[in-house]
Image 1 (cartoon, rainbow, N blue to C red):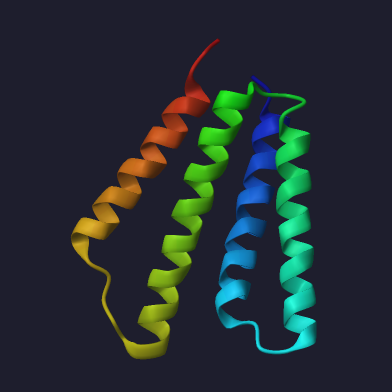
Image 2: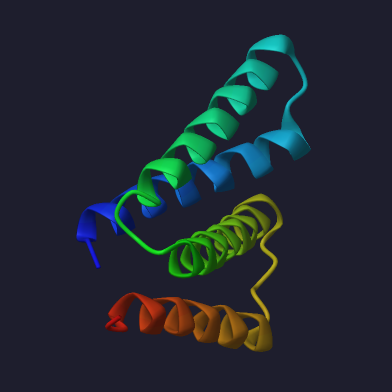
Length: 109
């Protein structure tokens, strides 16, 4: 498996986090356009990753990292905005998700 494929997946997952956050908070045209751009970057990055990795691994890692990044961004924004401390159980399951994704990355075909 190619590290280049995982780089594309990482970029796409970061863009996915950005557009998911943008869907929730966009309030003017420029923010909606930025959200649309991030959707496009996310989709194109995933397609490029498929050139280097099997679709099953690509999709699982893409969704796993995307989910983890979104939850982490939400935890950070809740803490910064209102001082809400993250729940230990939530952190445990995000760590489990990330370990599972890294386990898929380490698998040999």
